[in-house]
Image 1 (cartoon, rainbow, N blue to C red):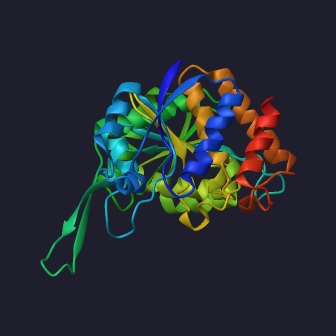
Image 2 (tube, rainbow, N blue to C red):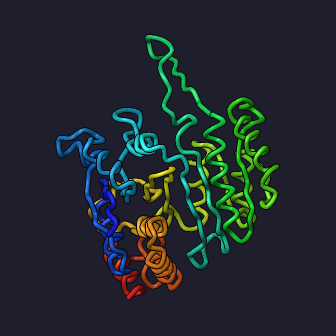
Length: 333
């Protein structure tokens, strides 16, 4: 039985993570959950924002299912999510977006954004330039090594998909050294990976082209901030963040989560969509050798969404979190 570190998070986190755990059990996935705390939930318990007990658990299990954690805006502690990615060198943030809602904005979208997860502006190198705090400076970091490994991962991911296409997104026309290096590495690797159709796009043009016709794209690889923005955009194309899972992949560790935040405004109301965390749990299954259970979970979520009689408010329905979870469990049984 595989042991998995479990962080339920805060806000709607405990509700949606409990749903995911229940669905995995119904699918026959055998896990021993080692619950730990981080973020607001840890602070409320009198612990550090990222307790050593949580880090020790993840160091031992090497796999985590994590609920959303609140990150203060403009003050307070830095993102726990970013800290975990950096601490365990989870270099590839992988966010699939697939059309599930009939009658939605687009049909036939099936793409993946691969985001470099450890560098860029999110490396957190910033400071005030003057004592009066009138000027702030942030430094972006892009290295050849980190660029090579995430682009290589994206090439391999594209090779496993039917369309075998990879698009690299950058801003090398303006950021000639940082984005320029990322693009240079991608083009060098593309010259060797002739099995994959490769092209590149400037970030602003890419955002427009995704809105015009997202179906033309397959796997997208980009730097940290651009990937954060584009993956939320892609979630909006297929029904919203309530259906957007994410994997954070390292060489010997992986963390699975929803893309969305903790949504404290609806916490405790029983209306949160657990679909993203349930799909993240399906990705976890595939990662640890429970592929059949993961497939059953993913297909059950898709059938419930497509059928349309049980949808949470974010998808235009009236179902509660529990009712949506019940429907997914019935599809599995």
